[in-house]
Image (spheres, one colour):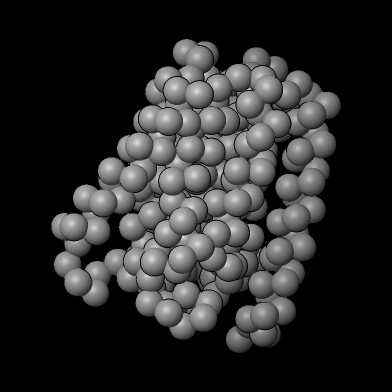
Length: 244
């Protein structure tokens, strides 16, 4: 369980540093209940998950680092640049792109998808498996962010999704360690993962899923993630109301 311990330790260390150096009022957000929380757990979990992945098996290490870093960076960009954007869901952001506007949500969508495909190409040999792997990695990243609607939800889902991966290798231990390290702050509403942390943890878990599954498993995971994404996008569109 070395990766989990390292990921948790680095996450807590980075979290403490970020809270010490950040100016008051910077990097904060109102949560679902209207309480002010900071976004420090997101970058901290990203760095922690990457650190833990460095102890994983050499053949999967590069894919995990790539997917986690890019997902965290794209999510962090959306945390900052998309703060005032009321649009939610892929359909809204793709509609804006069709009208000539590149939203932070679209940057996140394409950036994480590209990273997922690149990581999948590092993990699998056949073209079909590479494509399925990309869908699973990016899809898991977006799914964990999709469920991040209450304190602790994203971290708990990352932990649950990572458990089966522990039977196939140490890769899943890294995001699980990072998720466990931020869970107390998240549940206590002192901080929140935001898009940065949720996407990073999801991408890291997605890489572990891909590394531990052959084509049948990839097909099953990809189908489930696509269905969840379509459903989540529909719910987001209904909550947002008609686009004008």
